[in-house]
Image (tube, rainbow, N blue to C red; front, side):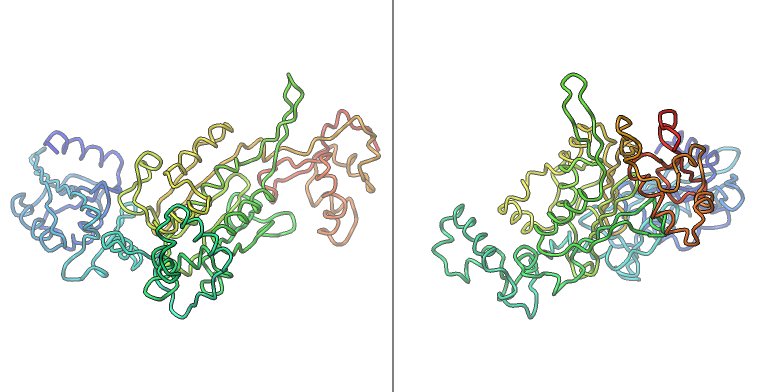
Length: 496
């Protein structure tokens, strides 16, 4: 940066009164600060790099104090940077104002193929840091491994599984797959079966590969129980919210099987638990169903999680998570974005592929196109249904896709046909009349006069809610202490 930019930077820090993801403030009034290694490492390991600002006192509200000696400070910071692997080359800027001198040191990002940058004396595992907000956090063993896996091009999807024989694979599925491979590559037919297994990555070094187990295994989770999907439906906006009866989940399932099995079962789970609104086209009178989530988007998100997750030994105990909240769905897979790809580039740049064998095999099986069209498909499907843009989050060790739906679909109540007699709606206790005025749960329980409050609500209130003749005043938060229940369309309902 030039001097004017440093002046402006100082003003901005004082205005905001805080450090940031790319900014570290040090007073350096009485000497060079100690232990700069952690921040140098964390700045070097993020794509944006980072900047030290010397001459402001963070402990006293970022007041200007100036540095003790600009020349000596630059020399000592350079010495810190030379003790890093790889060596860091900072860019210094010096400016003066109010008879004080200030120094900035811009730390450039290290190329991803050379990360993590670490303090040489501590070693790669203990000397590597990552920036989280304005703090420097030690990298986990898995985060260090992630960079190493990309640098050395580890192939975790075809690592051999010790002690597993070909009998663990479904012979019918395996034969169908090889037949498709031989059709596209006739030369394979002239090889022995053992050679075909080797060339198609079914085996590697006389061991069955992880890819083969995930694609054709009779029961893959017998060997790796957590290479599965944990699907849950939460009756609120966050984990921990409960429904009327204190249930934390309205549905939950461990989804197992091959990758194809898990994909199909995950979609079945979503269809089962999402709501569908009905719209009548005015001109044609045709009925149009509007699901909360377009299944094309859900399918691509789940498929991406299955084929692009990290399958290293570091994450083999971590399942994929599919969580349906009242306002959104989240699909979370172990392993952040792989290689040089950033969130901003998703769908626009050709990515590095973490599991090329799995991706190619799923293409052969007809489950994916392998044309980098997954993210664009998700975006297009959400846009076509006039839903919010999908959200992609790459965090420490996992990747998350968030799909939001329209609130009116969530809040939609089953319509009441007021043309039919109200006698068809069971109301043994006269709750329709009682709830003409909005009532709390406690008031309804007291009115029903039944000792078991939960039974009373389940027996007499829930059927009316399901029929749509009584509605919640706060449908997004069923367990809200301010929740009340009111008779729907009260002007058109007759007194019972």
